[in-house]
Picture (cartoon, helix red, strand yellow):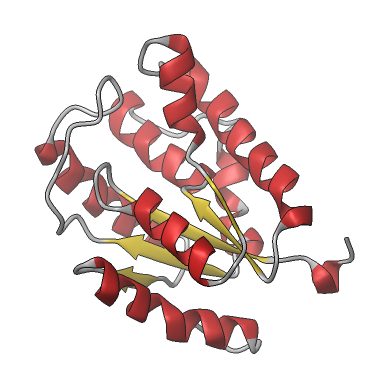
Length: 183
């Protein structure tokens, strides 16, 4: 696939239970393309445990590998349910910093994603088995995500409300992005 026909990668970031997966699937259906699920879910399911610090680089690399594998089959957009930047945010919270191996993947966010959507934690919180522990942690992660985006100079589109509102909030930035303009 040539660079000109490569899909625009759209990052969908947010805390646990903020609707990232639902939004990614809905956008993919709306735009008749693919979305890449969050690898962390698969990791937790297959390993039967939450990740430790040493797992973070594997999780981020696998997330990107799944994106790279899906990109040739995507049409126009590739919706990414999280990115290595989100892994870095969680690493900062749970492990006190961002691993040296993870940092370059997180640093590539501004270059690799055409648009970043950030889902607000404004929908009913639902526990996600082993993967997440509380609504209170989501509030902290949401704040850390905003700090990380600001520190890296990454603009984003806030997404909130019900699904109808969320899709509407994403549509215009996606169109501008496709047209080559600023989201």
